[in-house]
Image 1: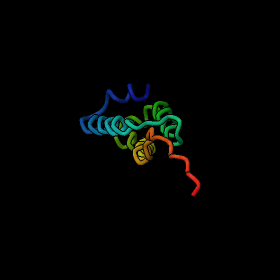
Image 2 (image 1 turned 45 degrees about the vertical axis):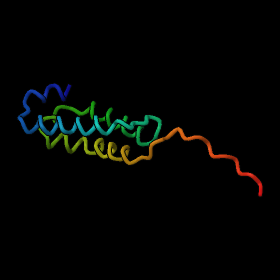
Image 3 (image 1 turned 120 degrees about the vertical axis):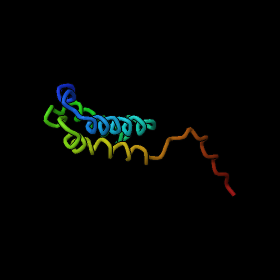
Length: 95
């Protein structure tokens, strides 16, 4: 509700920063693994961002400061190694 109420008073710079923030999050979640530690933290920060009130969403200074952890978790998720379905290693043979 805070996002919708405050978006009416946004200027062009507020909208541009919000769109770039959403684009960073959208691109960064391509390798989203919800069962990883970073995935659980990311979900928690999304819930936190959704619950923020209108004083936070009034300008880009407020929502960029409040959602910095969310963007940081996107970078952490991008740095995590990907799980690859590799064949198991062959059993070692006695020499």
